[in-house]
Image (cartoon, rainbow, N blue to C red; front, side):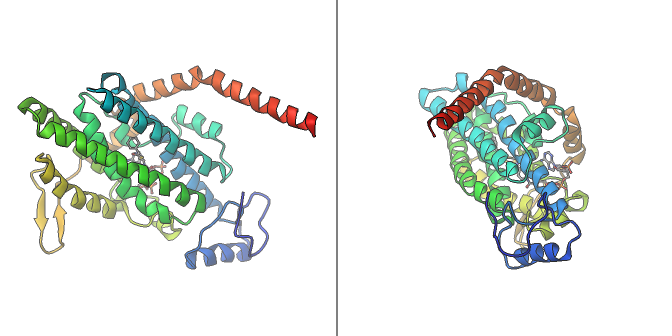
Length: 330
Ligand code: FAQ
């Protein structure tokens, strides 16, 4: 654990409480554009918000392995299979970095996983949709990883050091993921008519849920204002959603695929692409647990956790043995 190691001593739990000197030190660090580090004093709300967001992010990475893992055995070639396996492993790695970042705030991985398994913490809405065809691997890479990059690049500049640093590597890997999704769709789109139709069908199903990944509209986003004031979020949900649409429209043209929105048009005044209304009732329904795959995703995750208990026990036993041996030699 490390901290900036200047400023006043922090309280036992690291929270600034009402102490004006501690709160002032925290604010000065933010104002200077410096990073808050694990041993720095921070308001309890800042710690709580970070744990909530980082946990949700970590849960999304590991639940996000399921829709793609579903296609590893059915990938159309050995090359595609090797690439998909590497991608799914990357998502597990992202989960690991993020749970480790949350641990620096005092939330253990076990505690956070229990909250996920008990339905007390969220994961991204997008992973409650099914992957019906191989083209969905392309759509996830291009649109879902594409949305993830647009959302996550600004988090590399987030005010909390361990989260910001974890995001640097994650974003590099997500960029590769997006390109592999684009390449899958490009191949299908230029293939025979049924391959092109399969790619188009995937885009038709994944487009709107991808726009929902950025969260509710700004006027219905209870956390945005405070998270932006604390430098956890750098841009609002709607700003990032617009950035994503502006990035994707020209790419869709290159892919020769249509985005399923009759209201999509270039607005010369704003210099952005206008898009049609998002079905927020669907989004909030998915958050409540009514998406097509919510139950399946959580049941599978709980099962994987139970099946993996022996691995955690063996790793702990090995670590204990190692500590005992080192102590005996010393
Ligand atoms: N799904 O007040 P806000 C990926 C919740 S990683 C579910 O606007 P906030 C990689 C929100 O938690 C994808 N819940 O919230 C990959 C809050 O609930 P709470 C995940 C959502 O935090 C690719 C409530 O709604 N990325 O895809 C969603 O300020 C391919 C009110 O919302 C991250 O987590 C949603 N879409 O802004 C893996 C990035 N949106 O907790 C495999 C980091 C909102 O108050 C394959 N997170 N909610 O009960 C963020 O940037 C933010 O947390 C937002 C939400 C923007 C997601």
